[in-house]
Length: 189
Image (cartoon, rainbow, N blue to C red; front, side):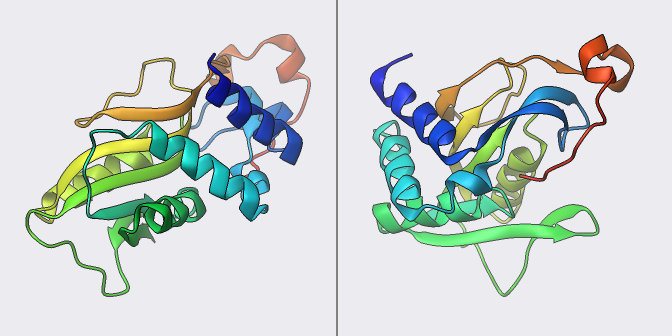
């Protein structure tokens, strides 16, 4: 892990965003660890620094607009857009599917950077990329604070992550005894 990765991880720890217990992830998997990105995003100094670190990994990626899936990607997506002087829009759930709302439009040929907080299976990020492409935008990359997919999540654009961590995840029927003994909590992203 390089110095920037260490710094980012320390910001998660300092803010109390890296939790330990028994968690039910949005993906439906269970984990002993959870990134509560909302905790780190309470402190705008941390958000500013995380966006700087993430942008430093985006050299060579050109984009006009940052698109974030709500809720997880909103704060970091907006800060990435602010620092890069790009437009910021988001997609949000409607009947459990993400969609552009609030009058947001993507112009044909508009270069889109999708920004998300954490990727495990990548469902919401993939939905956001698909929305950008279906509206004739040109998705350039997916930038995330934390990639915990262990390489299992694939996307039709480059995945750039600030921190790559691999904590084991489990299906409900394959929980280790110490997790099965604790009720699962679904804290949200």
